[in-house]
Amino acid sequence: MKQSKTPIISFSPVVLPVPGRHVDLEIKVSFPASGSNLPVILLSHGHGASNFLSSYRGYGPIVDFFAAEGFVVIQPTHQNSKALALPSSLPEAPLFWSSRPGDMIFIMDHLDEIISTVPGLNGRVDKAKVAAIGHSLGGHTVAMLAGMEVKDPLTGKILNLKEPRIKAPVLIGLPGGPEGLTGAARHHYPVLAASDFSTMTLPALIVNGDKDKNHMFSDVDNWRADAYHLSPGPKDLLTVFGAEHIFGGISGYDALETSDEDPERVAFVCETILAYIRSTLDPNDSSWEQAKKSLNGVKGALGSIESKS
Image (cartoon, rainbow, N blue to C red; front, top):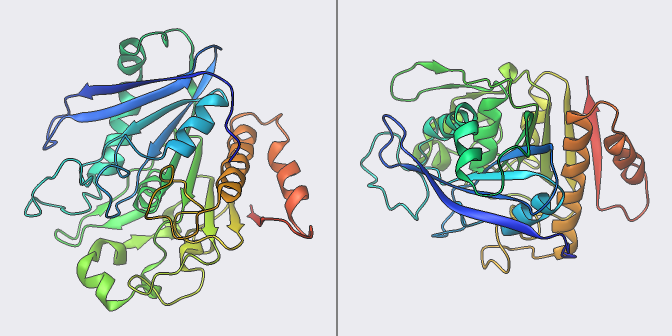
């Protein structure tokens, strides 16, 4: 993955007390050293077995890329992070699935406070242009913000946390529909069998690796593309050819959990998501249509794009 020479700044931790949360919310904010009218990306990490990749300390390849491209990237450490070592006996452990989108909404509600806390950022942010990127369980989090309803397995209450202030939701490698879920996954993570994509009405990009298959979760090919097929439009689906669950290494530089390490694939995923976000935040931007033309039906392309209105 080619490294940008654009200087970026990262500031962490910004610590926010959140009522009802077991611990304070810690975030990292990364942004270009110069420039104004910077749009915002909220980045939701996955679950995983790593101690720190699933926290504000992870996802360096994505964070560095988008900060260098002129975005303010805000990374929360969700309560499922192993870095926090919260007891497994707590309600909602180990996934903390409903507090995760709550973290993102809290960040939106306190964006002014965050901006004023970070040195060198005040007056440089376009708060009306907000995207959200989530990987794996983070994709599930962003799907909830796009309108996916989840029925609480313990209470039976249906939760809808649709957040229209997020203009460009991006869901990478998220869990698919309940129908394709294995019995083991239903037992260990019952909330994954309680999701309803039919209510996910906000426009969104779903990113699926055509080799992203884990028999613990599903035996169905392209199960992680369900969010596209089972939700109403407008939606877009980016299929990344040959990609497994870490898409070449998006969760961290030289991460051992990357089973398909490929810097070129990481760059491709980042650049294509960038095209989607730019065109979604700016209707006059043609990057997304150009991306479609450069991929669909082109020999040797690294992926393809499907869209529905």
